[in-house]
Image (cartoon, rainbow, N blue to C red):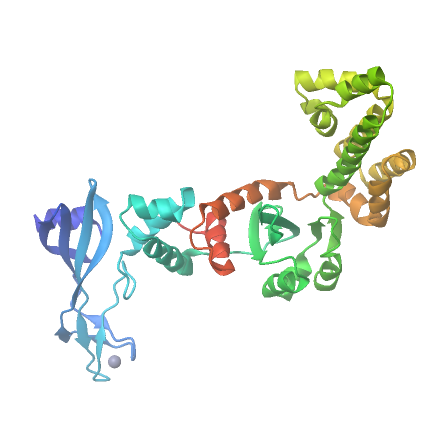
Length: 403
Ligand SMILES: [Zn+2]
């Protein structure tokens, strides 16, 4: 029976010596087969058993039954330095209450769920699960920045309306976040970047940023070889904002219209027009297409702005190269100057960064998917009393080297 259990347990070098069943939990008494151990102080092998030391640790379940190992972590006495020492066991860390493979299976569950649920399902406390996340991360978390060439810097609000922003730094080629800054403060972002070392910062060729102006100076200072690219989706957003503002202004103005028939006609066209106007035209629903037609008949000025907005998107989608994109953008700026005052101003101030997109079409588009995942993690709640916990919980999603 012990032989069979040893085989089922499948821990190399470990033997099952005894078993009991306590309240539906299988308890296996185990011990290493080796009769010697290496002294951690002087690296000498000792065969001299000093004393046995038994303790319980949780292991993977067998056929749905919880398994605890009653482990004998033996103490040897070193003949060279004369001191007793405990043997090292390769399947469990010192003072851990779970085997490494059990902790790893728990962390794998966390990746697809959240800490609290995993604790419930496995009859553990939240703190125990979190402790396993930290333990496994120490061994297996590897955030490799060595191949970083294209960096995205983006911010996300973890709680709506609270001004509670963190900054996400993303490897745009590998599509993974490499680090987080706890706030939008330049100092916080600088610390993350500097942590990567001068060699990595020097090899970065492009950095995609938003138009907040928060990071441009920092990037120029720390990343000497990087071209700054204004993320095209952020640029598109400011163009859309101008269109949205025009729509709101029209709605307000219409309230002052004296001619009741005219007022009703315009109000009907404006009603529920926001997404018909702001969404990419190619993605409109049938209903929104009809709305857009109505706007074209009733509100030609607004329709023209919509057409200019679509033209703007098309430049970014179709430009053949830097020259082509830049000339088309210059044309657009000249034509849109009157109606898109805000965005034309911003684009002119960021002209070099905006047109840099046309070189390699680098964008932070992938950040959106990453951000959605981060928000999900944040919502699941546990363990984010501090930023380091949150960061660790996020990084294991992408950088844990477990099979
Ligand atoms: Zn020794």
